[in-house]
Length: 410
Ligand code: NIG
Ligand code: FE
Image (cartoon, rainbow, N blue to C red; front, side):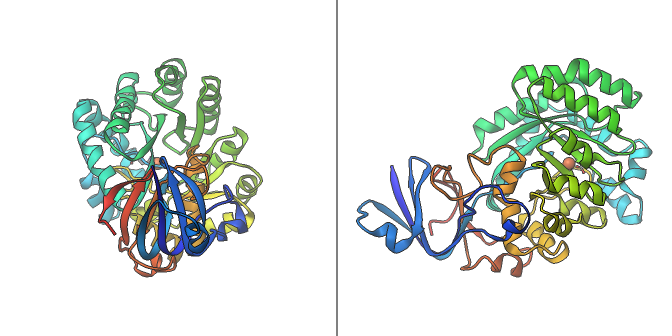
């Protein structure tokens, strides 16, 4: 099955691989572009006139619109039970995220609700979110466990991700995050010992996850605990990620680099030294500005990270506590308006670099020969319209592997 897509005012290819630093500004735009999809993969990319020459097959007119690669949301906590709207209202009154956690609220409340929920109920709730995300152009989504804090419930969450992989079109990347919070009545060292001996090996053995992640934070896990957890994860054949320097500058980003983690995420409080370490490494620096926005915190120094030469990705961090949103239009607006990224840098962060942050850069994240044909057609002509129509979803249709999975016939 072969089809030529044409009628593309700007074809944003993001070709040429993962980008760091100044290269994030280059997104490989082809004006009046076209591309050929064969059996779900990109078979040719170029100017319309070149691709049309001698082509007799089926063609699809995109209506003189902007086309980009599908978006990759490389950091979410999308499978969970219940909700925490009440905590949000306390935060609006002035309580901080950490003070709610210290009072015995926060993540552990979602743990109770997730333990109590059936796989079917968790799947039904998660499905709704994936459908909304797809409509905003998210074709690949990483999902973490971390609301079980015991082997059984962590595996239940990961099984839900496996179910979603078959029932939904979105490509999903599963991550074990047993070290998300310290369960009630336990000390952090005690719980890390449990993760190392039980839940982490069980998760690795189950084949239900590719990555392991840990929350390095005051009131969660220390650098030493994280070092042990990450090295055990590696021994067990998992790739790693770190929630680093979100509220307290503990040095999680430096540890992520030292451990060869695939990504270091959050980074609101990252030190200049660790910005340098990230810039010299292939660990992706993932910024999550929706979380900073929802918490009313300062944004991560994304500008400094890019100027320093780091590989920067942007993701939602969707979760029921600190950031109950996965709005891509809002994410784009925050990257551009508050973190001072150009729209090109923002798109690199949401496509090819997001793919690198969850180990999918060889498969998706760009429109170039050999990649899966995951792409978006927008109801506008130019990339610069995305932040300009602030907070508005301009996605018109979404394709995964060459199949239209959302939107109108253009
Ligand atoms: O990435 N930082 C830790 N974990 C989440 C919050 C999870 C929650 O509050 O439920 C985050 O912000
Ligand atoms: Fe997170």
